[in-house]
Image: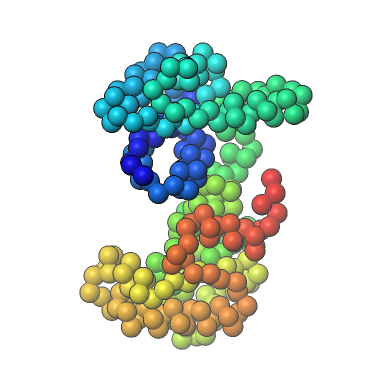
Length: 274
């Protein structure tokens, strides 16, 4: 399947169009060239994008794929006109209009996820969760751990920080994370600040070969990054998590999205319903 250019065109950030579009494109053996065009909220801007689509089609000899989330009819008609040189996939018309018929009401045609971020409690909760996760990254602080929704534990560089931030940004989850270090293994127990909150803990582990590779990128040639040390730390961490009754999974072959969903399912299943 030849490589194609894919446009994501939106009158907001384009996150919805790109997330949905990439999910669909993942079903096909292609490596598309992505072109993001957010904040297309006027006819003039839409015409500029349409010209870009036409130039791409002429240059490549193939129709670009165009995912759009445009609520303004005039703007949308410029991109989705019948003689468009791209294959236009209109997510709002595909999903919103049938739902208007089903519900018997018109949609509010809101641009973006938050029409006014300052007034959105959901948005404010996410900001608060991000601040919490940053303050409690890598065991920096033990303050207010009682407020945490989840505390991630695992050896250094196993994926705790990106997972914590993803949980905060996407789900408004207050996620702290604590590294398990050799001193913890010598003591044979979790870090002291975490012990009272064992029920909130979720463990991440990783294949030692992959861990050594990641650590070598940070500290090449160090004992910290040696394969023997990585094997020892991973083995000790997994033994501790089993002993403490902490649920855990390997981040080696899983995406952050998969890890986060598993954590929500096991620690905060209520957050899967919103």
